[in-house]
Image: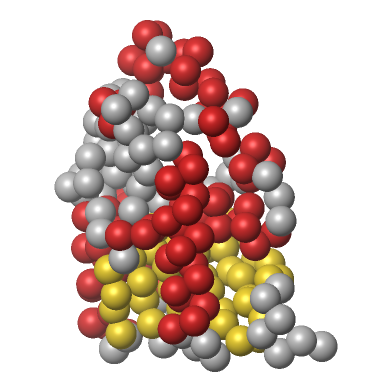
Length: 203
């Protein structure tokens, strides 16, 4: 049996204060429910290092959790949300009404996708792969919690499982869900759990 070198837990941020956005601005905060769901998701976890997207919806809780768990904390631009250009801050319903054809490309042909005045999928994937490699090299033999976004998590899963971005779009990544990977010394990955969501009945 292989010996795990690095344990990587991927945590999506909680629910946003503003509902219905396609992609929030970097300074968008979480709702009270969103914060509570993250507290429940992480209350029994133990990590050596916390890595976070610089966006407020990830960073604010990462700072709180790192202090609570006495963990090393690093804020990494590699794991920020895709830059969706002029679509950022726009309601999903508005995009479906006005730009449905281009929006559908994100799910139907993601490799070629680029939002208006935004980041290309190729650049998005490249920076995530670079950030993931950095985690593997810097935190060998450690347990890492990465607090980030659904698109980042899907991209990491595509890399780890050897599937296409198109296939990875089928992964449902809910708010405050945990997905856990093991990375081994031979470069292989094992998926330990996918999209775990704690009981949020009281949230």
